[in-house]
Length: 542
Ligand code: OOB
Image: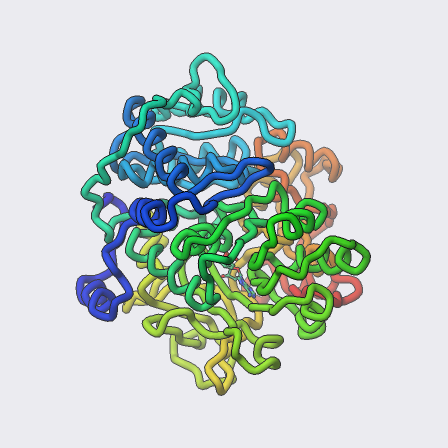
């Protein structure tokens, strides 16, 4: 077992095996089996590239050999920062096959975030694109390597350069990696937490837990080998990777179509051309799809199921989806940490419109608790706590944080406020964690505050989410300056210069004389939101 990983207690592991949740299959084997079963059926489509299951499997093997040749070993952590391209999938399977642990970074991450992830994960290797959207990842990689001695090899996708290994340099001869004796109960890869603390944490996902999650999600969505899943969201996002996403589609032999962006102008032509049947979006993107669908003439009739999750929606908004897009809505409450709740195809129409459904596994345990941890009755709003066969038991190498993030009996404290309906459906009512859901991105208020405090001229700062008709929430920073007041544009520039991902730079910065305080002397963020929020929003509530 990887050091720093908190496994499930033995009693639970035995239970999940006995209940048939954990099958002992590894993720590397999922693709191998799909290649054996589905052969030349198309596994992946991107632009004009179409890759069959057998070819994808063989490609992953050649890449596994390349990684081994360049010193990637079992248990090594490898940062993977790539857009939605077939290489992402082949490289990840190659790493899984040799027992290395991919750490999924967002493509938007810059030096600050990537550097943090290198240190946190102890990564020794980094896979990156040459350039993406006019940003030189290669230059950023050089700079990060210069300050992180532990980073040994940088693997470049889509280019060649001195000091980098090109992933095109695989041997051509057929090669089949002997799947190493991977322990299915061990870490397969790492996801990033949206974060309840200032800096993102690493979420270890095991083979057992992720094979089960993606398979159950595929079953609930009734996926079969004729389904075509559009990966509109970035595939490093749990939602698009395994809920059921890419991995769930591979279980059932369907086809995954990779979109470059989730914008309708990219996705609608793909839906028409590839006869896409299923996709997943966050609410702020659904709003854009609905607008464009009103006038666009692409044929979207193949779409049978739209999964929507990641942020709250009003009933008015959910009710507009089916009439406009002509497909079923599935509400999804999910998190990189584990628990997934889905509404089901045969749920009553009203509960699909107004609830986030039920957990995908009978072995998931949910408790709604008050501030003292006492379980509340159905209908009462409290913090959502959860435990189950695919919900983590500890963040990677974070013992102190784990003491507060979990209850004594291993329930994860989600930081979400929720209630259960009489039928047992989950309804998310708000959050107690200090996080902003800005469109599809989770922005940690504390992290942005720390960056701003590091900028010249900032004495105190509070970052809050303000209602926004397009993003759901936008990030607003209230800054108390030192004697020389910085101007908002300079502050944004200063954050940018620190190498922070663009989506974390506040949308609005307001210079204030002081911050409101609670009776206990803490910054009163609720008061800031109450007094500053303008017109209330209609579509996507905060
Ligand atoms: C998904 O995952 P993360 O890890 O980016 O964010 C998790 C958090 C939740 O704790 C909750 O605060 C919020 O996102 N959230 C929702 C929600 N679904 C997630 N808030 C309200 N309503 C919902 N339906 O966001 C994610 C992962 C897998 C599937 C879907 C979403």
